[in-house]
Amino acid sequence: MKKKRTLKDVLKDKLPEEIISQINRSFELVGDIAILEIEEELREYENDIAKALLELNSHIKTVLRKDGRHQGEFRVQNMLWLAGEKKEETVYLEHGIRLKVNPATVYFSARLSTERGQLMDKLKAGKRALIMFSGCGPYTFVALKKQPNLERIDSIEINPEGHRLALENVNLNKNLLKHSNFFKEMTEFFKKEEIPYRENTLLSNLNRAKIHFFCGDVREVCKKNLKISEQKAYIEVTDNWIFNLEAKKCFEKLSTYPEPNLTLDARQGFSKETLFFLIHFFDTFSFDLLIDEEKIVHLENDYEKGHLFSIAKKQSPKEAREYDEIFMPLPKDAHNFLDCAFSLAAPNCQVHMYDFVHDEEFPQKTKQRISEAAAKSGTEVEIKEIRKVGQYSPHKFRVCADFVVKKKTLD
Ligand SMILES: C[S@@+](CC[C@H](N)C(=O)[O-])C[C@H]1O[C@@H](n2cnc3c(N)ncnc32)[C@H](O)[C@@H]1O
Image 1 (cartoon, rainbow, N blue to C red):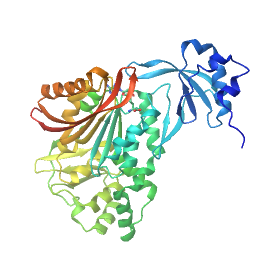
Image 2: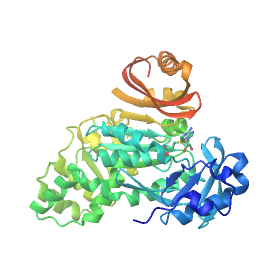
Image 3: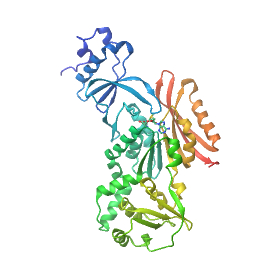
Image 4: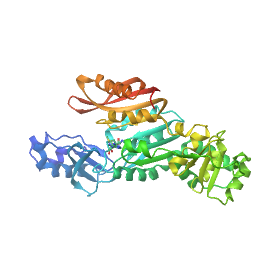
């Protein structure tokens, strides 16, 4: 068998042997882009090293070098092009999801793939999840791949480039929800009732109802956008509260309904079949819901309409805005946003907060940060586990704290 050529074989006529022996052979592979770290002393040879890497690996198309550490609010690292195609965007695969990434403009780490998988393996069906600091969406889509039966998943990212890529990634991963029980039951029901539907439209409507990305500061978005418009009831019961009709009649009526706005009686919640219809007509109608004698809730945009799932279960608009799982993957700063997490947490919400800690302060520092923030906002928490998930610098670790929000006394 022919012996595989090594970096040493390719470089031996170009660089002195003592230089070759100093080269760090590990690199991060993101799609077809290899990202190198090269010590200061070896920089004058970096183009030769990059070309050798291209020669040895036909699946690598571009070689970049990290130039400095992650910095600024966006946590982005400067990247220098060294060899191959002059590009920064690529499509990366992990856990059966596809992600368009740009390591030069949006934070992304392929090295956290195992951690993402392990974290999301524990996600249970029916949960409402929030991914703060979501970047181009790796946590969001791994969550949906591992648990397509989430009730919904919202994500917030401040870097507009990250937000743009995340929206593209919804399209790249739109089939994830095809594996959800809801989608299967919905299509089986329409088939059984001989109701015409287009699979692609249903799937894209379900994606619009369940997956929402917000661009902005977690603090601002939590305060402003994550709400449903409410108003005092002004309508008497009329015959457009059609969801008391038997399923097939209801569909026929909806198909010919002249008004773009439907008022639904949601005082008793609604059935799964009704939800099937609402998803079918998700992008054609806007919905007003009577949730009690006093209040009408207007569902304006996709995010608000997505709350139909919660409201079907008779959850109030306040409950519909809460989350059962909150992920905070911003180790440098996440603890400063704990008050936002507490304010959005449903009872027994599980929070997963990343943090940086020095070896000597592990795990007390993280514990202290959580306890202090909890005390300040009148919240009772139970810390389950604080684990190291990677090394940041010689004595500094990236850790993940898993804790439960037990009770909130101030709101
Ligand atoms: C460490 S990166 C993680 C990104 C992504 N979750 C991933 O693992 O690829 C943290 C992200 O948080 C974003 N970010 C920082 N401060 C933020 C804030 N106040 N509100 C929303 N996003 C923020 C940054 O732009 C960055 O994309």
